[in-house]
Image 1 (tube, rainbow, N blue to C red):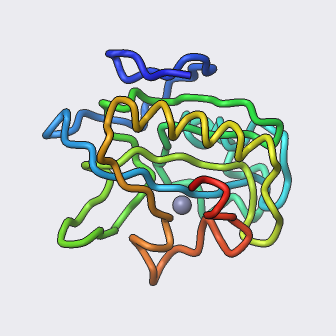
Image 2 (cartoon, helix red, strand yellow):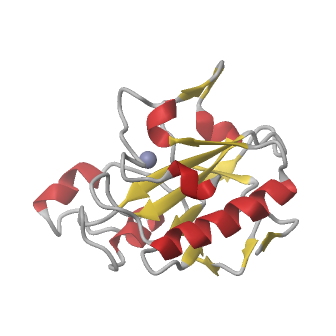
Length: 174
Ligand SMILES: [Zn+2]
């Protein structure tokens, strides 16, 4: 796998999101943020995460989706349970995955990070093929940005977020 000069991973399935904009400092990437997500919560394999990131989720389809109505979120990457890699935004673009967050002395981690979502929950182990895909993606990212750090969403927004959760095996990506 590699990341090209446009910030696109190959191979990956590209699905564009309107939930992105341009970074102020284009090449100032310092951080990878790892997340988990599933919609409906705990259900895998559907299209609703993709719909959420594309701003076309029917948030009246389920009572537990109502809180998503006003959310405009995205991530650069989603790794599905079967290991498929989907890219929503160039690594050079700013995706909207971190929210209010801080890392060391820097606020607004979206400005300088790449967001990777694993399809999953805080309560279930991730699949081996997801780690395989994640390792390949991180390797490709490090080839372009050798000094980039890796952290979890819960580390940059500890009062708000718990993902990627206790089931995420950090030693699997060392
Ligand atoms: Zn998250």
